[in-house]
Image 1 (cartoon, rainbow, N blue to C red):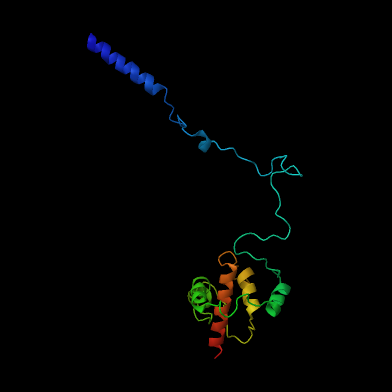
Image 2 (image 1 turned 60 degrees about the vertical axis):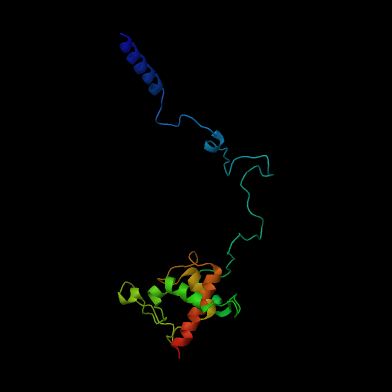
Length: 186
């Protein structure tokens, strides 16, 4: 009888402990501020600013942090022609690194244009894309500005590489493309 009573008490105690457990959510929060932060909605009303809104526009004329600089040429044929005629590299001769430009070129450009700039990249050889001209073609009067503009916006079937390359890297690729063009024209 005593063992039956002991077993009954153990079973009742176990049921009492496990019946209150809820497996669908956390039972205890030791630091509730970490689990339930005070959030602010970007466009909620606020007394902190004169216009009564939390989200504010940046001050006029500011540039975001990082490598972003405004690019003043539009993505049009007129913008391309203006860049071709007027845009020059922001790098001076001591900042140009042909080895780095070569690595970037081979990663982003060589697949189509070929590692020598002759228009015979892997995708062209496999006939995945057609019509990639050589940098030495007589009809292609490319300049520093036109190369940068095409890298920034893309042209024809070539897409933009502005998101893959920052400004300094784009100029390194431009310098390397000009070097390839000079080598092909020899």
